[in-house]
Length: 216
Image (cartoon, rainbow, N blue to C red; front, side, top):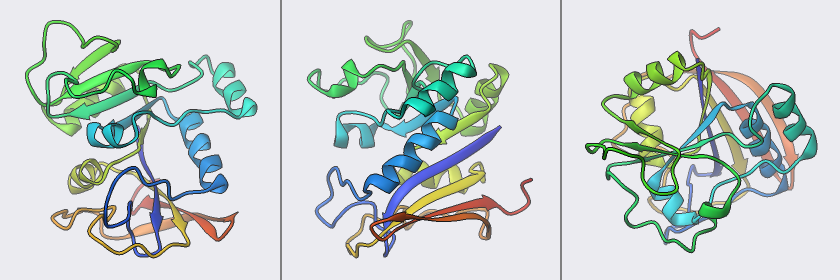
């Protein structure tokens, strides 16, 4: 199994400006490589806070990427697994575009689960441990997991040394503030990463893809 963290970050490592909110740092080049990562994935994982900030998720639009997934017998969009401390998405607004987007929604909660998935969700998972969740997904044949953020989720998985790849789009911005892509309290186990790819994306953006040291 491979778990890849995908983020667009500023030159000073921020996910959002000091005021916070739903920052859209990346441009067309970042969108292209994000869609490539989604096409690669068996499932995409995102924190509930990120969903609240945007009210929707990213989708694959490029026909050749949709064709790739069809040729592999996959759904057009990977399922979106939303991680939360709550048992249900009680504070998710029913007007969000999320509900009309063409993908399966899965719910992941560290709270005790209800007998059935929340309305609008096809499945639910209990988060007892991240390793346990990955083992369960692996047992179902899910091999490629895409982590879309946010920072707390990224920090938790890096702390447990479960992230195999980093895909960062470096955007030509200096934002300042506290919204770093890695929380100050994070203590990642892997401190060195091997550069696998660097690709200019246009408009000053640069793709950097790293692999955890020791992975093949």
